[in-house]
Structure formats: C-alpha cells, structure tokens
Length: 260
Image (cartoon, rainbow, N blue to C red; front, side, top):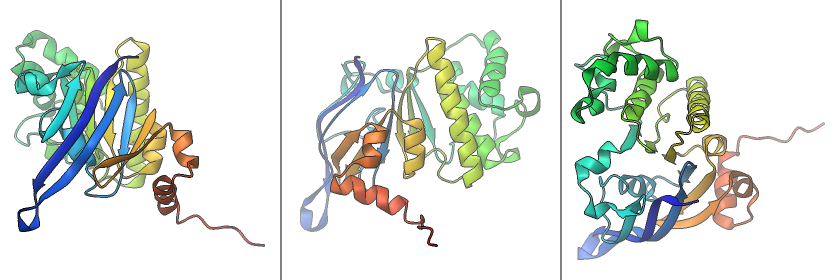
C-alpha cells in the first residue's frame, strides 16, 4: 500500500546552551500507509508532537523531507496543505464566539464550498460524532462539556473531508470514562468511513498505551527524537526491546498479583 505520509531523514535542531544546537528530531524516517492509524508514544519532550506538526508545516525540519501523498510539503501552499488535513488538539481550539454549527463549517466556508449544503453537513457530522444536531448546533462552546467539545472538534476536522487526520492528545484532558467513550466513538467512526470507501490516514499522539493499542494499526515509540520502535500493537505489547518493555512496564505498574 502506498505511503500517505512519509518522513525521510528528518532532523530538527534548535539553539541550545552555549550556542550548541539541540536536536529535537534526529534522522527520523517513517512511512504511514494510506488508510491506517499510527500512534506515536513516548515521554514528554521526546519529539512526538513536533513530528506530527511537521505534516501540516506547523514545524519545519532543519533537514530531511516530509511528503504527503508523495509531494514534499515544503513545496506546497500552506493554505492548500492545511485545508487537506484535519487537525484535532487537546483543547479543541473552537472559536468561543461562534456557534457549534459555524465552528464546524469554518473550513468549508473558507474553502468556498456552497453554503446551501452547510446545514445538512452540520447535521451529518454532529450525528456522526454522537451529538444531537437539534440540541447542539446553535449552542456555543462554553455551553458544552469537555467531551462534547472534543466531539465538535473532531466534527470540524472532518468537515472538509480530508484524507489525513492529525490528532494531538485529543482526549488527554478527559476523565477515564469520557475518554473511553471518545475512543469508542472514534474507532467506530473510522470504521464506518472505511466501509464507505472514505478511509482516513490518522497520526495520533498519545501517552496512553491502552489508547494506542485500541485505536492504532501501528505503534511508534519515540525516544529523544529518534524512532525506537515501529510495531503492530500485539508485537509492541510483547516486545523484548528494552525501551518498549520499559514503557509497557511503566504503564502497567498498577497491576498486582493475587496471592492466596
């Protein structure tokens, strides 16, 4: 299967102490197959979000190439590039003064899509993310719970029907039960889109190993700006590679053996 996103020899060096450069990303090469979900795991500051942000040019490599559908993103118009990529972040980034309906249709509106279709699009997208359009379309973000705002953020990211979806810790601020509901919703939505012949290529940044196991086709462990592992979920969970085993062990520390 062709790569929808490709990182080739990507480096990012920023100024450090004593005028020495500090590498945030160090020779990263990675391919994401079209229609698959890839989860980036790793410590805070390991470079996960920086790598994700290079796809839509919110971060620019010092050297190396990032390609989307075979095209170097550095050679594309930033506006054109970003309109073809859905972006979901932890705090949703919704415009507080706009209704939920206007938030969802903002990108199609800026892209010049015909307005007569917006009402039906809002209805379909809110329904797809599990919100009643009659109840929520005319509300404002402050009138929604955190989980509801995340659902709207996902609906907005899908409004322009982008083939690529970037998700940067989208559920990190939610309580465990709401987070589980959101994971179920995203997994079901991606499967329905796949069944309709509209698969999304998803790059997900998360600290949650269970979330990565549940949603992703591949799990990539990033350590100090380098790719330490790129494995299928089952392989990741049982890998004897030190960095992977250490991450799995740290996440499951709460498990206790039952003694007689």
